[in-house]
Structure formats: structure tokens, C-alpha cells
Length: 101
Image (cartoon, rainbow, N blue to C red; front, side, top):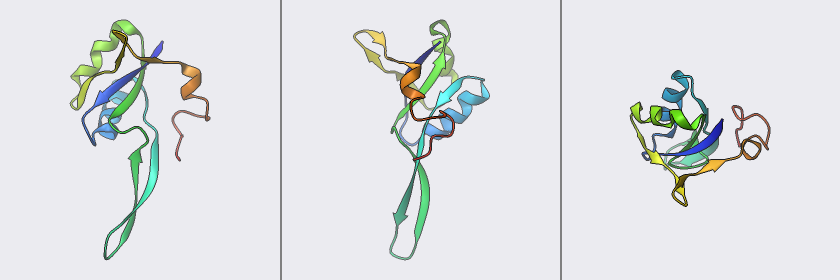
């Protein structure tokens, strides 16, 4: 199976990733913790490492399934073919599911 790069609507990365996981599709959506400051408080929030992108691992013949999820825009293409990421690159820093920076 291949990892494809999926373009999603702004600020919908976590929602899309959760819905795809419910469809039993393997998803890679690493999050980072950021501290946001306001005049009266501060708060730690999780934001996606790759804004507007989610990685999905699935056979190429089933790529169309993701378009049933609200928030999905399109696949990222490179030279008229869907952009694919090697498995070794995504798992280089340890567990894909538990990557938290």
C-alpha cells in the first residue's frame, strides 16, 4: 500500500483524519503543541504539523473512498500522478500514531 497526500479544507485536518480512521483507513496526521497567548490568558492547543494536508495509506484502486468525507478537497499530484510518500519517511521518527512534537 502507498501513502498518498490528501489536501483538506483549512482547519479540518483533525476532523477529516478522525472520520477516515472510522472508515478503517490508516491516517498520518501529526500534531504539535503550541501555546497561544491572549491579553488575559494563555492556552496550550494542538495544531497539525502539516497545515491543510493529511496522509492516507491505502491501495491506489480505493483512492476514491476518501471523497465521501466532508472536508476533503483533492489529492496532491506530482507530474500528473498522485503524490506518494514512502513508508520509511513517515515512520522515520518512531511510531506514526504517537508522533507529537
